[in-house]
Image: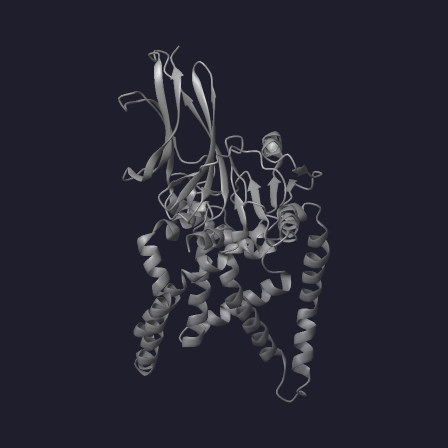
Amino acid sequence: MVRCLRIFSGSGCVHLRCSRLLPLLYVGFGLYLSLFDRPSLRTHLSGMGVMAVVAFITALPLLIFFYHYPYYFSFRLAYVANRGAGIIPGNPAMTWLLNVGRVIGGFFWQGETHLRHNLPGRPYLDIIQRILFVVGLVIAAWRWRKPETAFLLIWLGVMLLPSILSGDAPHFGRLVGAAPPAAMLVALGATGLLDRLIRPTMPQWVTPVALAILFLPSLYWTTRDYFVTYANLPDLPHDFYQADWQMGLFAASQPSDAALYLTPTQEEMATIYFALQDPDRLRSFSEGETLIPAGFPQQPVLYLLRPDELSIVERLSELFPIGVPGSEQDGYTPFEVEGEGERNWPMSPTPVTIGEDFQLTGWDIDQTADSLLVTLSWHVLREQDRDLTVFVHVEDDQGQVVAQTDRPPAGYPTTEWRPGEVVVDQVLVELPSDLAPGSYTITTGFYYLPTLERIGDAIPLATLSLGE
């Protein structure tokens, strides 16, 4: 559930942000009826009550989740409200007040400049739509006593809030909820004008012909702006993550049993996941010079390396002598490993199991005068729902810890580890300069940091002579 929300709460979730405000629409309309049309309220009260109960029951699982994890409800709202060129730090009320003018300007004379949301600078409405929209607003304001017209105006006002309350108004992505009422007001303006111009004695075919003539320029401008001008902008592929799309398609073309990894981790993954069609197939990690998720035994592995992560090719080549670095693509370099072949990581003839969670299949210790570099090969036995901390301790003959490194697996938390997967982790332990000469035992294992709960027993790796 959390993983899905991480995906959903990115750039493609404008519908969710707008839907959070839908209750305001119905609350506002209910207040309108209670003030200006109580007979209608009494007539429809039972139906509105049933609708509210059904909506609450439908939303209840999500509401429970947000109750337990409020961060996922508020973090994106807080982020967009405090980022952007339009914010006035420390004065959100003034930011929102100025945003009203920016949103109005976005509708009529200066659209958003973000290439992914709009043809830069093009207003939300073209000249024909602007005129009809204003006429529709005037008609709606004149008829505000009619419930259907009042509902339309409240709908528009509520759906303008996502853009008004953001830090980068006008944001056309956050105006998606305002599109239906805006279109209805344009239609209201068009019918209002035609009612004035067309006589009742005229033939019936005059009305559709007049509507077609009225909207033909708008159709022409929209087609030209978005299917010609916009489609040929040179930066469009970059802003729509075409490179990520191509990378996702390449990953999707791999054998179904191949383990897929992207490094380093990144925030915008929705395009890759959409092309891949199965987000759980792809895992991302960072700190690849310390930790490498190595796939599943005797199965192919594909690493997708971003340009700033090519330094780990040497490490991958050490772990996978049969691995083949591919040619650089747009935004990534593939490193492919066949299913059959040598895996060059530490292996032990007698693996050691930690509880029912992990199996240490091998280890290696590189010793210098002032440090130990411990390489651990972990075989995952079952899925973890907690981010665990791995430790490597240096203990004296009394069992006292004299040096240690305790940290989460670097760049690849245990909640991402999959049953059957192999993870090769390197842990550097700095030795104290005043370490007394003697024999010391090197141990490793896992624990849960918030409670210090040990996962199984510590594993003794080796006894070394240190401090000499």
